[in-house]
Image (cartoon, rainbow, N blue to C red):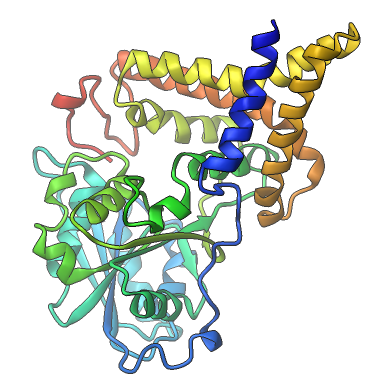
Length: 393
């Protein structure tokens, strides 16, 4: 019991001291006026938006991309990935709106070819359609809304720091009670897995990106066969970040409140499906990694409050003190993401309960894959055997 009480405290001390400051949520793009003359000539940029059955959300998101305040050549490509709801037609109508300033092309696809995941195939088709004059490609999702200076700030940072990939974790919706419970923990866990400080460091192997907003050096990506190396990737953003870094590119990942996801998840069931769709994929469909993940979640998040409160009630101070100290460190590290999302501090001590839900989602993800319905998204399903997976998103 003594070992069980002290081990979580050791884990949290190691995480806070040696995990790249993952809890810091102040990693943002510099303001435009702070960059001076970093960019002499604004390079051409093309935004590529893969979209499948997104007709309902495009009217809220696409105008923000088309109306970018960018000083260089800027255009937009919407890749309609075999939609059945008129996504391409809606995009074309929006491009004719008064607020639109960027030219838009709509590419109609018939779905992914064999060996390709749906979203990656759509991204690749968009990449192939980008004019060679474009220095950068902005991969952004159909549900993402951008502030008017979004592209300008992304390009300035890439140019000043000579980066091949600049990515921002879009601010996810927290309108519903379920979103306010789950979303901050999702962001917290993502950065715990992929600390931005390690992503920036060329010598570190850690690599990732956030799929809602990824500015990539087009020539650099094309020179390494585009997205062919990650054709089957179901978690496309992490795969793209890993690809760019693996072939020698410099990468950067930060947070923002100016790039926002408009996709709502009003019920816990909606968030459950979103996370369970890819959780087991992240574990490479390994039962052993699943077991290790669940045990790690229990030891890191559940033992401190449960054993700590029980030991406190029994006045077993040698057990209570390390457990409550671990719980305190955990809660303090969670505060920055709560501040980012403008949520109350009282939520911080509840992180163990949220992570318990995450553990259940991960187990359910494995169950879905074993039953042949893993990764179901808009009519496409990831097969249980990852090596023989059918093309999908």
